[in-house]
Length: 242
Ligand code: ADP
Ligand code: MG
Image (cartoon, rainbow, N blue to C red; front, side, top):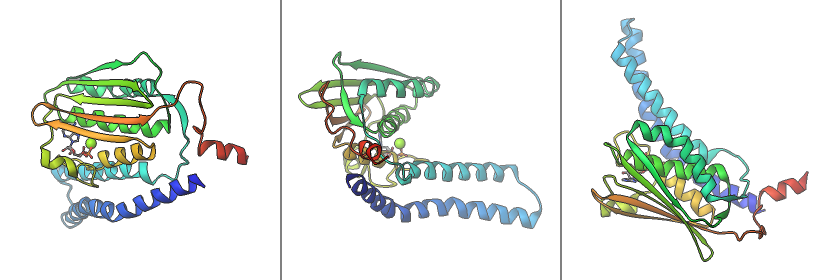
């Protein structure tokens, strides 16, 4: 039942987004069609146009890729994970991307276990989105510091970059579908991340200062070690049905 509710909530999100996605994809498609028509008329392929067509195709691919994360009818399988481990595995994925952009990653994690009930791939997606934004906010490189702590019944993950920052009036708009401050951004990363964190009963907060940097803080309800009650919602139901 809960699973069904979760799915129907997702469907609404997807429904709301579909119009926006269609619009975002139609623009590059129009460009592609134009160039192909031109080529049909002239019988020649202009390498500059080919380049543009490829980048438009990449853009479509990017938008569809991000959209699929939401639209994929995959069952959400919640399991107990240590956030520190989830984060470490993301760092190993994104490390080379960091190198490429002169960005180094620093971490300070609590010694204590940081157990949460989560859909691991979704949580990874959130960390990737936030780290990517951090990298993109520092065009000439810098540091991204991630702090993970466990306090009361909460796990706190804060990711701080030394990037361009976000003007105050822009902060409320972040997370709106397709809101981007970048020339080639999709404006989907923060929306997807917020959705995922909310579906994990968590919160996401943005603090930023222009030309100083940005801190994104995520809080998730923590699970006590040994207490695994209710952590398999979704997953357990399916297993029992077999
Ligand atoms: P995209 O990265 O594709 O633009 P996002 O949803 O990930 O879309 O981010 C939306 C916008 O929020 C970005 O374009 C950027 O303007 C702003 N933003 C998000 N994270 C940061 C950050 N760490 N530093 C500066 N700006 C940020
Ligand atoms: Mg982004």
